[in-house]
Length: 142
Image 1 (cartoon, rainbow, N blue to C red):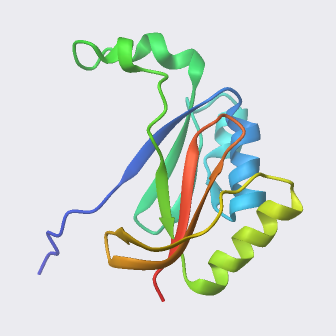
Image 2 (cartoon, rainbow, N blue to C red):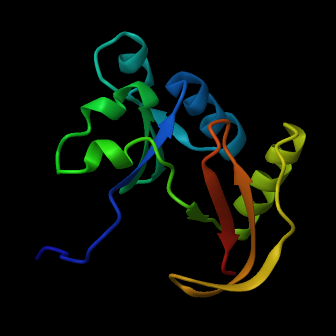
C-alpha cells in the first residue's frame, strides 16, 4: 500500500555563498547539510539542508539565475526570494533555535502568539533572516 498524501519536497532559496548559507543553517538553525562536500568539490550545482526526512531547502547560487529557463518568464523571476519559509518545531527545539540565533546576534522579531498555520493555531512563532536576506519563521504548536 502506498501513501499518496502530497508533501512538500523542497524550497529553493537564492544565496550569494552556498557554503556560508549551509554553515548558517547548520550552526544557527540546526539543519543538516546535504551534498555540501560534493558542492565544494564542484560535483553538484548546489547544496541543500535537510528540514526533515522528506523536505529540503536547496541553497541555489545567485549566479544560476540566467539558467532558469524551464518555463517562459522563469529567468525574470529567478533570484527573487520568497516571502518567507516557516519551520514547525517541537517546543524544545524552538527554544533552542531562539537561543542559538540570539547567541549569534541574529536579529529576531517579537514573538507572535496563536498564529494560524498548517496545523491550526501555533502557540508561539518568530521571524528571522538568513545571511542572504531570506526570511524564515519558526513556530511550535504544542
